[in-house]
Image 1 (spheres, rainbow, N blue to C red):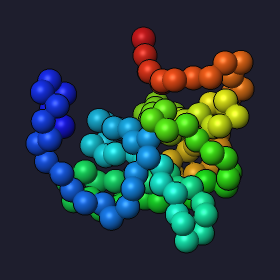
Image 2: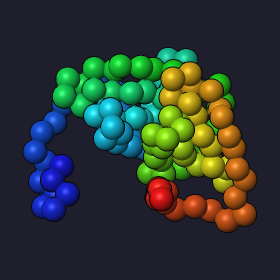
Image 3: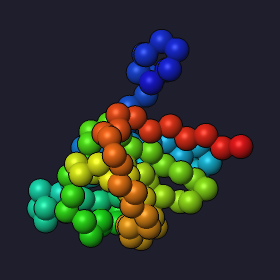
Image 4: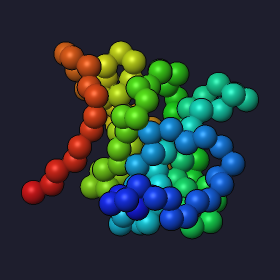
Length: 117
């Protein structure tokens, strides 16, 4: 999607619904969360945006619910970051799906932004 005009410039079918996707510009991939109706589990997936192929799919051990449209990828830590329905900010290692860190919030979060010095 062209950020200036909102016009879709290209699209690729990945064969599943991706939630809370985040762009990793360093590796030119999309990092996303998916839910499988087959096993009832959430996955962290890395997608090649040019081919639509899944490069990595790691199960998340937690069965938490997650807020829609609140997700991000931190290339410095290699973690996908999102917010649970219990207002916990959670950090999942994309190479393993392992929970690396969880921080309880006092108030609900509506967006994530990343700044580096």
